Every structure is written in C-alpha cells, then in structure tokens.
Length: 240
Image (cartoon, rainbow, N blue to C red; front, side, top):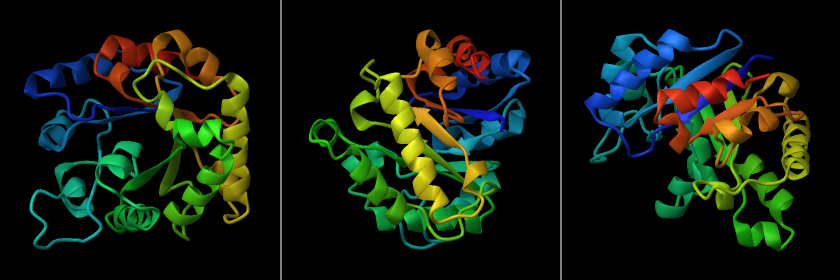
C-alpha cells in the first residue's frame, strides 16, 4: 500500500506558516500520500490553498451544542479537512480522554466523512514494566470502534516516551509492536491487512528511511519535523 506521511503541527503556526504548504506542494513525492494537520485556526485557509490534503488535530464527538471552544467533525469537514487525529497521547494525558471518548470521536469523524487517525501507545513506565503490548491491546479494543476499515481508519502507534524527546524504540521493538497491532486488528476486521499503521515519535530526516522500511510500518505521524517543508519533504522522500 502507499505509505502516508502525516504532519501534526500541534499548537504551532500562524498565517505566515502557510508558506510551508506551498513548498510542500512544489516538491511532494509521487510515491507517498501526505497530509498536514495545522491548528484549527488555519484549517480553512490551508485547505483553500489546495496545496496538500489537510486534517484536524482533534474533534468533539457531538455534532453541535453548548461546548465552548470545541470543534465538531462536521465543522472540520466544512472547513476543508479530509481527516482528523483522535486520541493523541497529549489529549489523553492533558485532557483526560479515555478510550471510550476516543472511540466516540472516531465515530464522529466517520459520520462527517473524515478519515480517523486513531493514536495509541504506551508510557515509559508501561514499557519498562513489560506492559507495552497489553496497553496497546487495551487501547485498540477500546479506541477503535466496530466498523473500522482501510477507508475510514488509520492507526498511529506513538510510544509516549518517544514523542518530542529525540528517542525512538529499537527497530525490533517497532516491528514487534506494529506486528502486534496488525494481529489485533486482524482478529476483529476482515480487511485489516489494508489498514495503515503509522509510526510516530521523534521521526526525523535522519531516521525516517530506516523506520519506514520496517515491516508493517505504513507511514509516519510527524510532529516537530513537519513544521518545516524541507524536513517534512525529506521524511516523505524516504517513504518505501
């Protein structure tokens, strides 16, 4: 399958940052799909440029209502988004999002016609305690709703301890986890073989080619390195 290289700008970027999208458009690779998820304030302007597909970083499960400051999946779709990240570890940690909340957001994404990029991953304590596989198994069971398919769902494995730290798991650890995720999906979904599993956590130009060549790694969810077109394009060019 074609790999997906998705950039998560997090809470970074103003209007001036949209120039990076023009640079990405001019040099985007032909062998991989790309996606940029800017902050909500930039989604409509980014989508209007038509440079690259645009996604949101989060959505609320409800269509509308008295939820000050929140954004629904339908609002993202209306602004021009084609996908949305749900269940990122920073949302789980700082906003107390449970697996059930993440699953509800994934269903909301489907309802609006968006691709749901569902994030899963263990903390350092869970990894050191030997519980990484169990944690991810639980998150898949609770966060990935019935009805997931290659067309509406992508998973992103992000070991929490690797996000923004410059540290990454060993190749063997990534292969083990991605194979485990694939097996858990296959136990529930007939078309699990076609569902993309992205790796995220300190992906950068220096390590992208090695990581993207690993078994069951179907792309990357890129944080800080996606803020500059040069770095993001170098990662995308490393796609296998």
